Length: 555
Image (cartoon, rainbow, N blue to C red):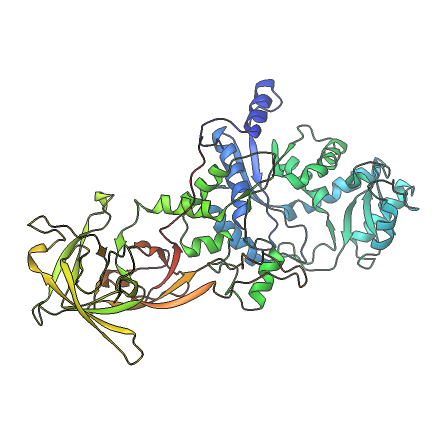
């Protein structure tokens, strides 16, 4: 994945050097999520990076589920991840794999290490193992079971596989170096006993490999050349290399680490999202206030906008954070020329054109997108009574206010010039109705005498417009308090993160289906909700407002 200047990132430089020196004659990458939750925006970087590299170098891309921990994994998560990855545009074709498919090979690999004297069965409890492990400044102590014979270890490991021990009673450990400065190399656990049903293998196994043992084996079996992972695995690389070296794979893969994609003031931790779901604060892992890929899709983000966002963030070894505003910039930029611009009034105030003939009806022509003529035009019903936005009228205008107020003339978008002649209020002084007159000669929004107006407002016909539910989102995080409460460990939830209003929209918008998106003039981009929309009754989620303070970085 090249950045926007076209220069190569450090991973591409490594790959091209490997190809030039004959280390590998092809490029084979993979995306290996654990199916223990929904993917989020950070995963998009890894997906698109791995897929993009395989595509750029005419190699292969594997989709592989690292399902070695059945206590947290579900088929629901498997299916959601597959859907997310295909939606992002990463097509694995016929290369879909599961780590659990390799359990027999992993078991044989463990037996091979035992026979080489490189692994042993240990009886230490988890607490004892922590005590023996040492610290960053002090070496660990060898387990009293470290020097069991090969024969005894083979028998004990077979017994583990046959279900003769309780969970936690015994583990298989690598025999490396208890004095290593890298804690990951101090005889790490390779296998543990666990009696839990696996989503893919059922109850076939009662021992399961640890991630650090399974992952390099999976890569080696599949012929992965460049095992690209995030920066927290850098300290695990010596163990990765040890596994593939000791198991004597002929073309060992190379692990390369890059910095994660961090987004400011968002919730990505699976346990936090799980808590929000269970407490009913959000309506699921794809609630549009979250940044799971499924949530962004439901809200109305496009694959192209996320691809652009990932490109803007770039690939490096240095941790950094991106603003949510940058993601919003990318979706605005993607949709502005693609989607029709329709009229919807979110906070309706009735306007009556007193000199418009009673009972007269007409249809006016309106372009679907003034910046993209290819989207064509539509006919909009117009009549004597309209709805306008409440903020588009003020009885006493503030300085520089250009919209409707008594005596002021404005343009009704794609319609006529109107002049405010008065208004009505209720007993509390709230404006309930605005009176205007119109100039029939200004049809289409221009005056034949050349006079200009400073304000243009949108509207819908009161008789023809239809009410719809519209959801206006803010960040689910209370940004002033920070993402997490230090005392409770919970998310600081913004109580105003969701506001539902009844809007009045053009009749054409009633045909919207789930995932259909539009620009609502002056109000932002909106998408029909895939779950709650019904035929003839769409529910709209606001994807993003039209205003942005984000500026593209200067190259």
